[in-house]
Length: 491
Image (cartoon, rainbow, N blue to C red):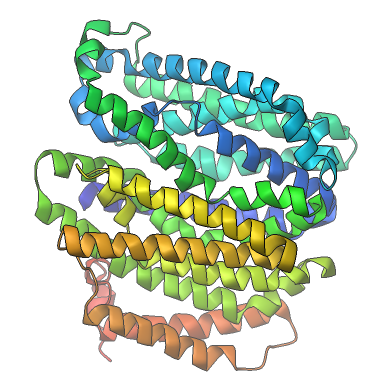
């Protein structure tokens, strides 16, 4: 796991720095510089555009992930694959824009009652998804070259800094509201330009496509794979966005703003798995190509153990400090506290199954993940439609918990019975016991009056319990064994 570990650590550093920036933006800047409706509008614009952006590449992103080892040829500029990606996205964007024109009245009517402000900026859906699609597929292209750190910097740090700048400019009247929304979207365009410049510096891509290569490369199997992966990508990314898109029909933009702010707190838990998956996709694809099952099993087992430990630690911190976290926000956001708690549990369940999606998606049984993801997105849509009108924003959190829980159980069972991979053992039990002990000890300690001191105090207690357990029971040896000082500590 040398390459994975090195880039995973750097990715995590940038990701967590981005989380800090995001926390500052979400907790201090946005609630005080924007209204909840304005926050909700930015979230629904991103969620709506990102969901549809998934269709634009017409599966070329998944083909790049899965088959780039066969395409890769530095001398021939990878047969012009960079430009081929652009052509796919242009064609996909034209088809999608025809859809947006044809069903414009239906979409506007869907948001007319509760989120009319979204309709005022409907014209952005013709451009914004295309920008997001190119960012997604060129991030994959960069990852296929084993270069992920800069893309993480752009995704997690740069874009947040730029958005904070634009929020300040809007608040201090340098921008009116329409200009603010336009610059908010333009931030992603700037990110795309920097990403393309980086790839050119890294790879010196060519605009000349080797059509003779691709005529033989795109067999029926790969064409079927690419179209199948369109829906797979939609389900995997759409599950994170569909709640806010549906919420815009049943609830107002203020509710979406509160919900988006609340669940952002949980995004800190997703950083480790996102960092691992960015690079492990390519590693797993190469391992399957070389029939190196032992390496796949090692990556899977190690990811489950480490991610369960980190996820449990972060979940305990969020839940035990939830009262203090929401004391830092304006009073109207308190209704989102339970959403954060439910989503933290949901995120822990996802982390506890490791990179199982990557293992399945890069295997010859890749179609299985599409079936599971179809179940996931259908479950999410149905439960959101049922729960949001009945329970409000917490209903969407319940929906996500049910959907993600079902999805991950299916993947674990499949890998266990079909590929004979079950990554849970006595170490998993020790991790669960550590989580239970930490929660029981810290949660019921009365909160300190100062929310900052309370977060530090309870966070310190949780850290001590996890630290002792990790050293005592050797829960993360590949990490602790490399730190000489930790090797000398005995409990």
